[in-house]
Image (cartoon, rainbow over all chains, first blue to last red; front, side, top):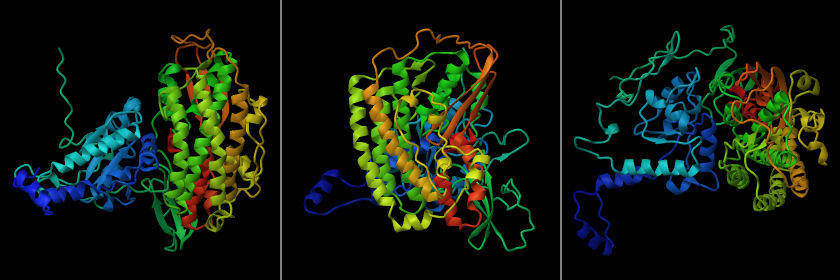
Length: 207
Length: 388
């Protein structure tokens, strides 16, 4: 984490009451402990998302209790539920409206791949076709503990982001896109069916 | 790749055009599908005069998951997990309604213990549904957070029961044709009884918080009135109908399951306003606790599933059946047509919250836009059931 600081010196200074940190450490520490999710539920998983925020599971322990109804104030979009073809453009639009840095958790089987409703004619086969997803949670619906785990994974991911250098965080790189084209309902289906910049389907080798 | 900037024309227009001849006096607002109080992905196109609603068009279909079409393409038992996801608060009652209609179709008898277990689980579902509804409703009125925390505290206890019995918190998939999947142990029943015995304390606490609360009274009394005539002609069922004073409860009318064996009363409202609908839920929770206490005393030992029912290659005879129960939100029915095959020829759901939602415009006209959220919350909709 803290490349430039000697760990021994740091702990010695700590004993003297001096706290030494790097800019990157401080920045990531602040960001990972105040993730504001977008208050936005789609289907069944949203109820588990509410349960995570409610009394027993209490996502506030991880700094994520401030659910914001406006995408402009949110850092994290939890895609909780089945994404239909009618809803997909709105989700991409909401994602575009969020300010950088922004993260996406795909919660539940439906948001990952269409889940049990995959065979349906109106269900999108995974939200990662249009927007980049940081953490996937399987389950139908995932338990609140699973959402908390995904949340902690996301915190870990934020903690490892670099402020500078070749592999710096995407939101600091002006080359990286932060908005993605919104699909529209065409003649038969959503057009385009997927965003090739985001979606790379695995190539299965037939033996 | 460059980011795209949308033009105004490229943005999606409201599918229901309210005409451009609004004379500049009315303001057209699209509420939803992402809105903190729409209880899911539901959109309303509201025409406002100042703050008063003059026109309201609901827009559905943001969660249309092809439930009925999938139901016609999988086997009869294969639909059971899908019914969990209809009204995702009340998977047990959805299971029951579907199992009941298949049992009607195939003429299957249900053992006594299974019927008692079904009643117990349906009433537990009613308790947790009404508790969380009241939490959400107070949330919509601006009591941000606190009532919901109280409600979810109780809901989690009931979900624990569901989980220990069926293995899942929300998607229980518990009922089978001719009975139930797993038996409840004596310890489970004792634990459930303990939780039910403590439940009235929560109901009293909640009642105390809302009954005399000045804000609740100001926000709900004489808001969203429904006349009994309108409710009956629109096919409204459930607590919303009873809030208008119409005594209609499928548990009494049909007497399905073993409901005729239990003593319980049907709470009735008087004015049909939001306050009555709210109180209807509080009172029904009390009656459900009464039913549960009787069921815990009466439940007999015995088998939980009819051994004659075939699990694999289950083919009901040619015919049609409509099975209905009193779900927490109203009359939930499944209409099935069998052509003798392994999957239904036609599979139709009568969703209570969709039909209750149809009179939303009648309830909202003349009220302020802030009241729309409260009225919508008091209907108790779940989009999984509305759009299916």
